[in-house]
Length: 215
Image (cartoon, rainbow, N blue to C red; front, side, top):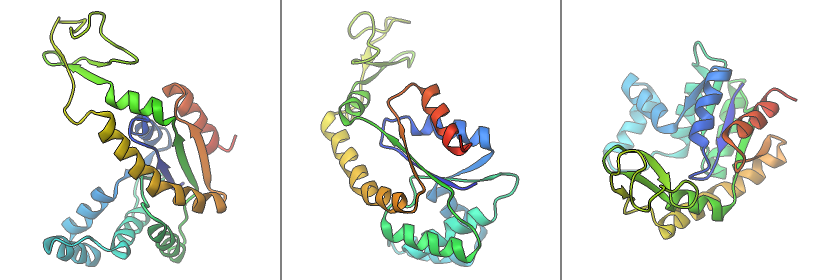
């Protein structure tokens, strides 16, 4: 079983991906990991990718897709692959389908974790942590009992300089622009399954399992 999982920043995609990897014995594959693996092994695709990177160029879609498909085709001790946020555009998706078909492989499911933009922005921009013990908070959903003070150690609660609504809104817009056409592409193929990412972690996991288990 080979699946693609999409989800905006802050929706909890990493948590779900880790649980899915364990339950279904999937290789959780990022393009970066696959690329580094091919370069390290010195394969033909790896050498082409290294040449582009050494010259400061973007690695072409053909090379990236070839590397991903190689990783899928060489899976050992796993039941399949979970592609995390890849492909990133229609060109990559079309090339991925073509190369996989040539190798008698296919994508079985595309899981899209859906989220309300306003809630996601609060999840991201509201993140805070204790400077001393590292305990995490969110000023909107799980604030400290005393403003600015950690419940555990009375340390100072701080945020990151890039945790602003403007920064995260830009990130969400980039994600939406990248994935909207991809969702349409996979919807037309009958592979897209939208999951409410605003439910609890366990509910989201259960709903994904229902799709993958064909229930």
